[in-house]
Length: 310
Image (cartoon, rainbow, N blue to C red; front, side):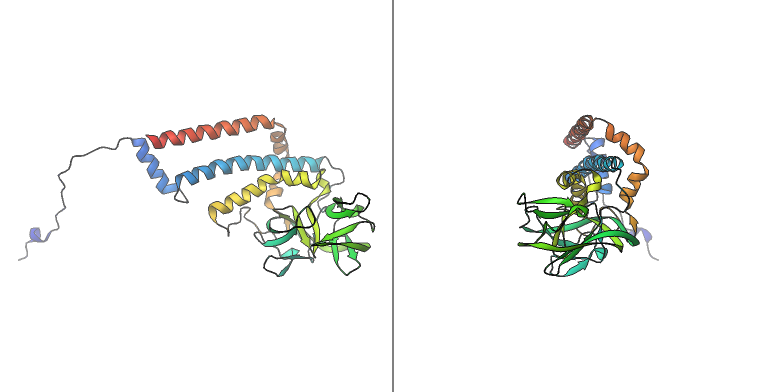
């Protein structure tokens, strides 16, 4: 008969004194870190949360500014300021891609504001896409066979012969007296044709510029009521948020969660739907908001340091 007591696995007993944890709070902090920290680095997570909060508030303020500008511009309509979907952009890998096929994260070429420097750029957001809608375009045709189609309020880089410098003008105001910018050269305009074409798109890039059919353009529009360089500064929170999210979650992550193929992107659509609330927030003194953000940041940082020092 088998003796079950002889075959039982007895637990090992260590004759060591019990030492209770020095602090329940510290133990709880470690538990939280292990359970909820997505990246495995508490400091990185804390910085990410703080920066995301700051950039998120700044993003709302920036886009509220844009909405307020649109509200004050009587010439604005939902179709203003777009590219023709059938035109092409230059990819960094040497290929071409139609504007209506651009995706978030696409690496593309743009021309810097000086009109001479070719820079690597990135498509970060498609604000608006209407593949089946017909709209009036201005098509610029050059003497050497290049062409480009823009809506009337869209900004394009041109050489002003009288001023002898590069300026940004609305497409509807460009004439044959201006010259268009291409990499390492300028080209004269042969003729400008106004016609209705189907399919328009509004991509946003990190540089604020975009080479379309090898011709330099701005991604911004005059219907916002301000110059492209000011708009580019206003969109800074969007660029920071884009890079921050991809730094935290990887280069394949889409911070704005959608590659739209038709209609208005959910981000501007939400802002337009809540315009009254956003306009109220925008009218609050921005200095006060910055003070609150800085105070909360300092408070959270000190709280985090004290918690880990115990």
